[in-house]
Picture 1 (tube, rainbow, N blue to C red):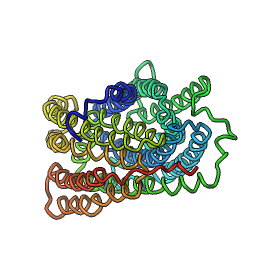
Picture 2 (cartoon, rainbow, N blue to C red):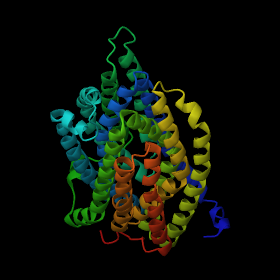
Picture 3 (tube, helix red, strand yellow):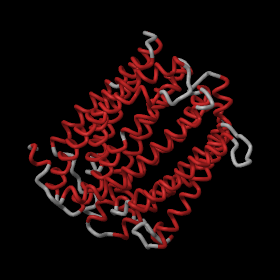
Picture 4 (spheres, rainbow, N blue to C red):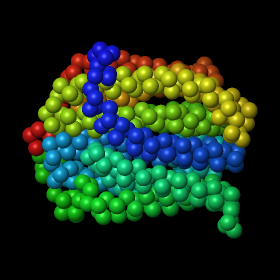
Length: 454
């Protein structure tokens, strides 16, 4: 695609901004408020940061499961919406809710019954495990309402209604942050609950978010306002096609999340300072990554809708445009992240070793940000939205398990390198993933009309 092709479509950017801005604002609020939570917990010390960070790895795994289910649902709902088929959009919502709630129940039971076992998979520090276990049991009560909110939000975004989930999510997360501060330190006459206060705040906020989102969806009769009979009215051909297309996405997220879990376990076994540093650095990186999550979601919606409408040439044209925008924007964002890394880390009351480790990790992340943004766009925004989910599975997880995980083990337990060097070695998997994904996008063979025969 020529350079001028980025700017020769006057209709593209207004529509893009209508999608990207609300999604990015929602992600920015999530990342910023999560960073604030880490900052608040960071006032309790390095052990508290490590404990909450590791306990939240379980929630992170569940979020990735939601993301896998939601990505599959978004493929179908965007294409159905592109051809004006509301009935099947609501059938897809029913399938997504069934999978999300089922997964939430499994994770909730595991966290309630075996929190110590789960945390020992990541760390052998008794203080971290003891503190994290109590937090995990309480936080697990938020899993089911989180899953319901996530699926409704994904269907609303896929049908172009991005402002409602944005507003509800920002409000809930703002409430959670304020309540966390009150409960952690015991303000307004309440007892100081420490890290458990953050867990209570998370659960209350997620329940509130779910209730408000459902109320607004049904009050305004939005596309996701499905009646029970519409949620369970799922024809066999749709179920078969959904599972055939979505299972590679769900399996991919599970395999990818297990890899992230292995990374966290490796970093935690380097030292408690290392995992605390990584948790802080990845939280800061999450804020920097916000615009590219918004772009990726917008790409999935717009490309999916174009495919559903039968305009395959526009879908391919949009794909090239989105990849260029994400990589170019991330180059500038990575530079900014490197410049602000040192002063931002000064806000955290952690040990000097954890400070030094976090600074090194942030510099590595800033260098690789453009590659990661490109991968996110190509795998999530392009390949999956085009129904090319099997190739996306291989591109996303293959480099992680054949390159990233072996290098993490080598750097940590054989070469005994500092964590920032281990993270740099791990990031080589992103470079390989980028090359594989770019080849597939340029080939044009990723476009599939998955709803054509339904």
